[in-house]
Length: 497
Image (cartoon, rainbow, N blue to C red):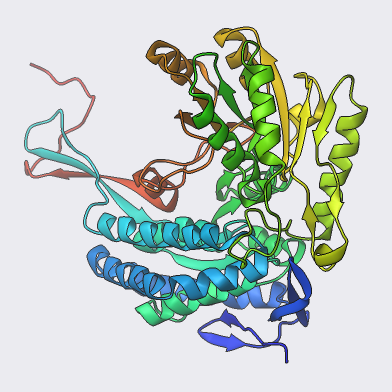
């Protein structure tokens, strides 16, 4: 029997949306139906926003340290249920169990970090230019926040957004990806169990074209926080501009790992494998390009080819599996199309993989081989466009300047990595690489929640998630002046001596 999951609208769980229901399947085994979910529409969005708006007025009056106690309890519950949630997540989106355990751990870490911010949320106190006058700045809630999250990190990314939004005193309308609604339901259940007001947090599963657009157009949603493709992000930015909504966008990447001739090649190899094929390449921070110094290019390519050919592909719940399936059939077809494009581009050479796995134990899932191209040049599409799958392009560089220039020659700027034993080269890379994140002797994936996360160029619009920087997204600054002189004092106005 198919399990029935529910949406949370106005403090009530509903089994069916105004547009009916939709099913969620296991991408490793299409016979495995995770559940049936309400397909919500504009009607549910309207109710959800009204509920969040009303509840937010009371929530904003709860002292931030008390809000933090609820977030802390949510972190405790996530910790207690970590493996159960991770197994559910692997079933619905495919990545291997150690990765989904890590996904939940990010949510736990974010909960505890944001609970700490409940006793901080620092503002500034500054001297005023007039006597007997005091100046300070404080954080105020934005109001109702629309949260739109992707399928590849179905617990971590919602916590990145919702925990800081709640700490800052906001109401929530949450639209998860239609490929991963089960993890979202479990997260919202935990928030309620931890003590979040039922009407404050609203879960509205459904399509982006319907639910997402209704959120963008609703006048009482004052902020949209979105993680997803750059193409969709542009549409969201345009709509938010039209309605003058605050808008935080975390979008695509075309991340590169540089390996210099003085690098520890064994260490760099481990980084390249993890960065390119972890999560089946379905991360915005995945290593899509490998830039090798020409002196070590042949040797390193040989090492990489040997190891990548041994990656064990299968169901993410099986202990021996190192790489799971792609999220769905459409993604499998997209990856196949990029392989076709790569094979036809100039002198790019396919040296590993390149095919969907559709037979035997793979016939009921959306699997794809680890894929590597050599001879790739900067101008090629496989070197410039986000593929979001297990496809790695190898480019060569003459020296450090050439490697950095190659890395920067993209419309994106999320994550970057360089392997070198030379501290001078490392600091030059830190200075000159155009990216929101730079790793030294670490792969392009693995960000921690206590530092800002986000990118430059077409990767984002200047906002950051994680760390204390995310509070600037989910709060409004208010400047406060207190004059206790007992008379009118006019700032910046000359007075007679």
